[in-house]
Length: 528
Ligand code: FAD
Image (cartoon, rainbow, N blue to C red; front, side, top):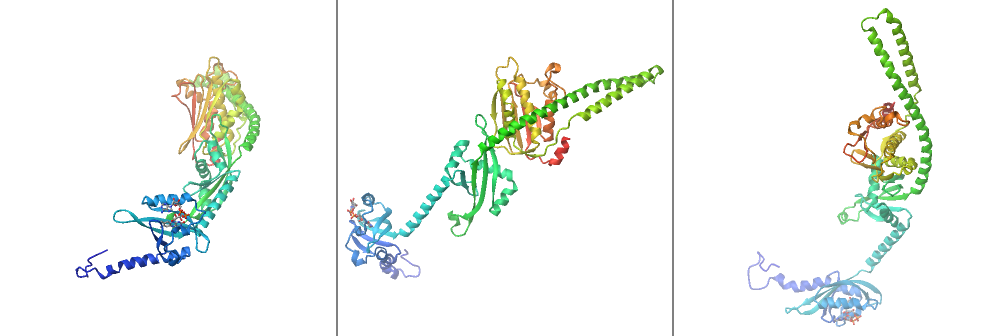
C-alpha cells in the first residue's frame, strides 16, 4: 500500500483511498464467493458473509451469537472435532472435511479451513472459518473411484496377463495375471521385453498399426530363461487407442495420448505338445537325412581316394612324354590314358550319384528353439554318456533369416562332436554348455565341452574335408562334419571358429549377422 503516491501532495492526513480501506475489506469479505464466518475463541459466531447464508441457509440474524456447532451433524466422528480443536488451539491452521447440516435439515459435505486470529500478545482472540459445499464434487469423485475399482476388478479377473502402456512404454494399468507373469519370468516389467521383441519382429507394421490405432493378434513370442526353466510361449495381442491426456500440461490445450492394450496368453502347454510331436517327427527325418549324409560322405570319400591314383597316372604320363615319346612306351601311355579315362568316368559317375542337399526355404528362425530341439533330439545320447547340459540362452533372441533344417543339422553335428569328445575313458567332468546372446548386429552361439579339446595347430585344419582327429578313420569319422557345419554357416553369412582362449575342452563360437540382407533366392543359389 503506497502512503505517498507521486501525484498526492505530502501531508499528515491519510490519503482518501486509505480512508476507504476498512470498508473495502469488509465489502470484499462480504462478497467473497466462499462461506466465511468469524468467531470468538469459543467458536461463537460474530460475523457471517453472504455466501455463508447461501451455503448453510442461516441468515446473519439467525447465526450471530450461536456456536458453529449449530452446523454439526452427528455423523461426523467426535475425534475429528477433537483433532480440529487441538490443531487450532495450538495456533495452527486446520483444513479438512466435515459433515454439516443445512438449516433445512439436509446434509452437505463441507471443505473447511479454520485459521486462528492473534492479538499483539500472540493470543488467539478469534477464528476465521472458510468453507465450501463440495457434496457434488465428492459424489463425482466417488463415482470415478468406484468406476476405477470396477475397471480394476474386471481387468484383474481377466484370465490372461493384461497390461496397458502409454507412449513411453510406461505401465499404466495391469492385472493379477500380469503380476504373476512378472514373477514367473523373473522380470520387473516383462511388457517392455515383449514390446521390444514385437517391435523388432513387426518392423514398419508396428508404427503403421499404431498410427491407424489398429492392432495385432496371435503374435507368438518364445521366452527362454535357460537352466532348469523350460521355455515358455506367449500369444500376444495388442490394440492401440487414443485417450485424453490427463497431465496438467494438457489443461489448456486438448491433447490425446496413444495407449497400447497388450494381452499375453500363455500357450506353453500347447506349444510343448506340438514340440514333442515335432521332435519325434524330426528324429525320423534326421535319421533319414543321416543315412543320406553317410552315402554322400562315402561317395565323396571314394572320389577323394580315386582322385589320388588318377593324379599319379597323369603325372606318370607327363614324365614318360616329357622328352618325346619313345616307341616302347607308346602302348604303356595308351594303357595309362585308358586307366585315367576309366577313373575319371567313375569319378563323374560317382559325383552324379551324390544325393543333392534339399534347398529349403529361408524363413525367420529362432536359434534358441533350434538349439533346444537339438538338445531334445540328442537327450538319449546325452543321458547315456552321463553328460550334464548347461543351457544358457538369452531369454529373447531376434529371429535369423535362414534355412531351418540346415541350421539344425549343423548344430546337431557340433553337439554330436562334443558328445563324442567327452565320451572317452578318463574324462570325469562331462559338461556341455550352450549359450546364446545378441548385440546390436550379431547373434552369438557358444557350444563348449569338457573333452580333450583341439590342439592349436589343428584349429583351422579340422574344418578341411576328410580331416579327422580320430586316427584310423573309424566308422563315423569321415571328417566332413565340421566341413558341412562351415558350409552351412557360410551360406548364412556367418562365422565359425574354435575359441583359442578356452583350455578346458573345446569351445565352438558361431556368429550370424542379424540384419543379413541376402534375399532367399540369392542364398538358395549360393547353397547350390
Ligand atoms: P462439541 O461438544 O461442541 O465439541 C466436540 C469436541 O470438540 C469436544 O469434545 C472438544 O474436544 C472439542 N471442542 C469444542 N469446543 C472446544 C473449545 N472451545 N475448545 C477446545 N475444544 C473444543 N463445526 C461443524 O460441525 N461445522 C462447521 O462448519 C464448523 N465451523 C467452525 C468454524 C470455526 C471458525 C470454528 C472455530 C469451529 C467450527 N466448528 C464447526 C467446530 C464447532 O465449534 C464444534 O466444535 C463442532 O461442531 C462440534 O460440535 P458438537 O456440538 O458436536 O460438539
